[in-house]
Amino acid sequence: MLGLLGARLSLGLRASAWGRVRCFPVLTRAAGAPQVGERTASAPPEARGRPLSLSAAAVVSSAPRPLQPYLRLMRLDKPIGTWLLYLPCTWSIGLAAEPGCFPDWYMLSLFGTGAILMRGAGCTINDMWDRDYDKKVTRTANRPIAAGDISTVQSFVFLGGQLSLALGVLLCLNYYSIALGAASLLLVITYPLMKRITYWPQLALGLTFNWGALLGWSAIKGSCDPSVCLPLYFSGVMWTLIYDTIYAHQDKKDDVLIGLKSTALLFKENTKQWLSGFSVAMLGALSLVGVNSSQTAPYYTALAAVGAHLAHQIYTLDIHSPADCWHKFVSNRTVGMILFLGIILGNLWKEKKTDQINKQR
Image (cartoon, rainbow, N blue to C red; front, side, top):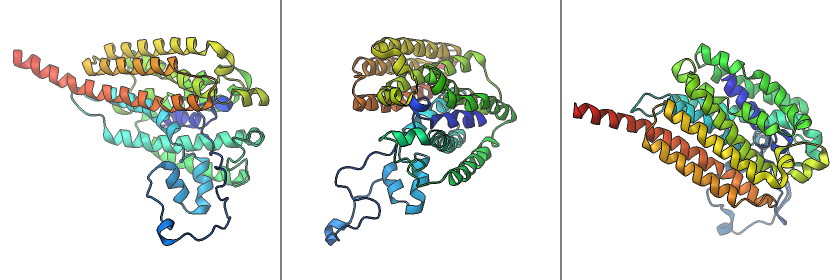
C-alpha cells in the first residue's frame, strides 16, 4: 500500500494548512479543568470512578502518560480523518468482490490497519512541517511538537516506526499493487507544498487521499479496470473537494494571517455553488461506476441517499460558523458508509437476480 502509504500520508496534513482534511488539533481545555500535573482534591469514593467510555479520546486519555503525546501526534483521539481516508478503499474492495459475495474481510482489515498507520504518519509529517505555523495559532499551539512535548528527533524516530509498520502492510499485497502504491510517492512528496503555492491544496489532497480507490481494486483483482477505477477515483476527489472545502472555512481567518491558501479563501461566498457542482460531478461519476460494474437497485438507492445527504449538507451549511462547518465535515463519514453499504447490498443483489433468471429457464 504505498498508494495506501501515499494516500495515508496526505490525510494527516492540515486542511487549510495542508489540504484541510486536517489532523485535527487537540481541543482547548475547558475553563477550570485541571492541567497536567496539577493536584486536585481527593474525591469521595462514590465520585472517584469515571463512567467507562470507548471513545477514541477516552482511550487516548487512559493510556500511560508517556505515550499520550505520541497518540495525540498521530491523532488517534480524532478518528474522523482515518475514516475519510479508509472509506474510498472500502468502496473499491467492495466493488471488486465477486457477484453475490461480501467484500474480502481480510483486505478490509489490512487496509484499515494501513489507514491508521499512514494517517498517523501523515499527521506526524504535517506537524514536523508546520511546527512554526502551529506555534502562532492558539488552536494548534498545544500540538505535541509545537508545544515541545515531543522533540524533532523523537518525531523522526516515531515516523520511522509508523512507516516501517505500514511497509509491512504494503508487502502483503500483490506486486501490481506494490508498484501502484509506489506510483503515488510523487503526490506524497509534493502535496505538503501546495498550501503555500496554490489556492487548490484540497485538489492535491483529493488526488493523494483517494489513491486507495485504485489500490483496493488492484489488491483483489491483481490489476485495475479503468472503466470502474478511474470514475471511482474521480468521485473520491470530488468528495474530498466537498468536505475539505467545508473544513477549510473553519480556519480561513488563521490561514490569511499566516499566509496559507485554500479553496475556502478562493470560493468565498460562492462556496455553495462550487460544492453543488462537485456533488453533481461526484454522483455522475458514481453512476458511471454502477453502470460499468453492473450494479443493482440497492447501489442506486444508496446513491440517491448520498445525493440527498449532500444536498442537505450544502443547503444548511453556514460557512461563517466554525462549529457548523465542523459538524458538516464530520457528517461525511455517513456519506461514505451509505455508499459502502449500497455497494455491498448491490453486489449481493446480483446473485438474487441471477437465481431468478436461472429459475425462469
